[in-house]
Length: 249
Ligand SMILES: NC(=O)c1ccc[n+]([C@@H]2O[C@H](COP(=O)([O-])OP(=O)(O)OC[C@H]3O[C@@H](n4cnc5c(N)ncnc54)[C@H](OP(=O)(O)O)[C@@H]3O)[C@@H](O)[C@H]2O)c1
Image (cartoon, rainbow, N blue to C red; front, side, top):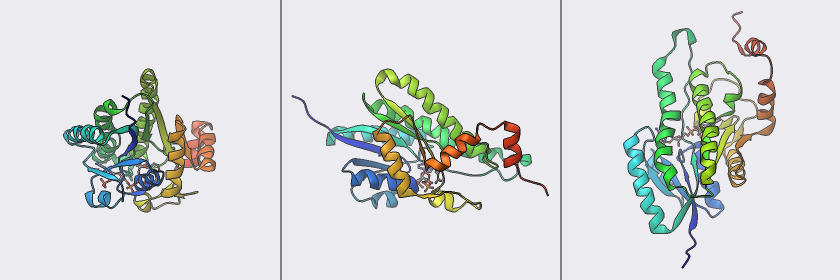
């Protein structure tokens, strides 16, 4: 006897911003959503989603969550078709000459090392045909000022995604590296600089959903902004430095 399982998506960082908009968009399409974050109250407020609260930087918590998740999938006859590792944080290096290594470690730990914990414990729950989404950023296309920590963490994620794609191909698991431009969320609300072509979290969610359904290798948006950055990245490095560097007078 064959049983048809119900497709489900797991989204980290679903308590706020892009992750929250993504959770709501998937739910609106009739897809089961397992919404993850630390803020239990916010997760419980997502009507129709199954909340799982844990800290991605705590390997033991991720492991316990994966055990609970395995049972949840089994009990409900759900099949994890997509996992979107979206949770992340952003902090800027304000004074490169007095490099803040504690800040650097914090950002790398939350954005990169914790993604490793999620991959270790959630990947075995994916079956053939599944799609994994890793949240990088269009910041990786150019060396932006003050982005030494954030940009490096996202560049690591982009490479991680490309390399994983090669190794997971034989298991028929696709990997999408997600590179948004500026999206209005609590994370960017803290920025003190101009954010050209900023879009809403709902617009970002639609773009990510479409890209994940089409199993795109790279999901980047809004197109005008990201293509501009990609084109600019072809400029000679010395010209880029003079365009992007802070002027002293
Ligand atoms: N907004 C943009 O313009 C933009 C552009 C490019 C890429 N991104 C990336 O998109 C992702 C989402 O960002 P956002 O703008 O939507 O920011 P946000 O509103 O601040 O959301 C960040 C999410 O990450 C979760 N998170 C952070 N640390 C966590 C931890 N230790 N354990 C578990 N969950 C944690 C937060 O959940 P809790 O607080 O509940 O833990 C929250 O749900 C990030 O990876 C960000 O780098 C954003």
